Amino acid sequence: MSQQHHQLHDQLKATLTRREEIAKLRRLVVNPPTAIDFSSNDFLGLTQNSILRERYLNELQQLDRVLGSTGSRLLDGNSQYAIDLETKIATFHGAETALLFNSGFDANAGFFATVPQKGDIIIYDELIHASVHEGMRMSRAARCIPFKHSDVNDLNRILMDLGETTNNVFVALETVYSMDGDVAPLPQIVATLKKYWPNRENGHIVVDEAHSTGVYGNNGRGVVAHFGLEDEIFARLHTFGKALASNGAVILGSNILREYLINYARPLIYSTFMSFSSLASIKCAYDMLASGETIPIQEHVHLLTRRFRETIYLPMGTLLPSDSPIQGIVLNGNAPVRSLAKYLNNQGFIVKPICSPTVPKGQERVRICLHGHNTFEQVDALVAAVHTFFNVKVPTGGIHPPSSSSLESAKL
Image (cartoon, rainbow, N blue to C red; front, side, top):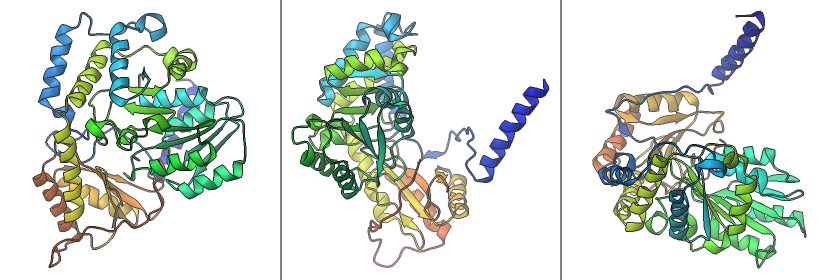
């Protein structure tokens, strides 16, 4: 190895060492196969679902091609199968059109890097996903302004400060946030924008539904559909790698938006398109959603969430104010959350500690996710293990549902 390579490796190692010292060093881990999953984003448990597996294998048997797409979609990677799948997804979500991307990161980055025009303004929730930040970093927008997490008053303050503008104003948010599990006040955000643009003249809401797909709305159509706001949203992102046990993503919007992204979204233009096997998996997952087969699973997930929240008792710390399947036990300090997570891991439960500075100091937490494949008995066992860790007995009279205390939100 040359001296120059030695120097570069020393620099990289020093950077990694500094990252480890502040507890931000990332590592790849393999979960024990016999442990109970309370960590993944497999909200409906479809990765373990025998019906989806059978549908998928049958779909592959009927396809003439099941392997690679052979190229970018603008060259040789497109197919009638992909176009039909987009039509199916758009119809299911009540959208004009749909456009598939290889990942949610690609979709968000491609959208925000190209759709905002020169001089436009992007107002974004301070907890928006890193992929949106990546797109904004490359965009032509004149200003990118954060608003306090899910704070409609702060959003309104920013809109008032903008005054009248002929430029487009984009408001970017997620419908369910991955670290805190809270649901965005979407109806109030829509109403706030209507005060300034009654007919959606140049105010545009863009939502990321990655963590609500399959979990919220009729047949799992998402939070936008739950509130009946499909016509009020300029663009919606749905991903397939969480509740749908697949991979990839889709942007829902108008025909013009779809055509524009095909022409300008670089992640779409310059990436080999996903394989037929991936498209088949997405199709089969949507077949299950549309048929109603996942409705009992969806209901079960919310019942598990309620069971968890109503039976857990914390003598210290706080339960995140979340009604979604994403829950969290907030403790003060990295050491306590690591200790609790390690104890639960040793008891056979997969959970992960989320430490500062990933979250604000004093709001470190053990993140807990509930799934369609979990049982009430497993949730009860998890709660019992938490009680054992804290060496507490359930108070006489039972457990009272936790209050929704306000917390400074996690920053990803």
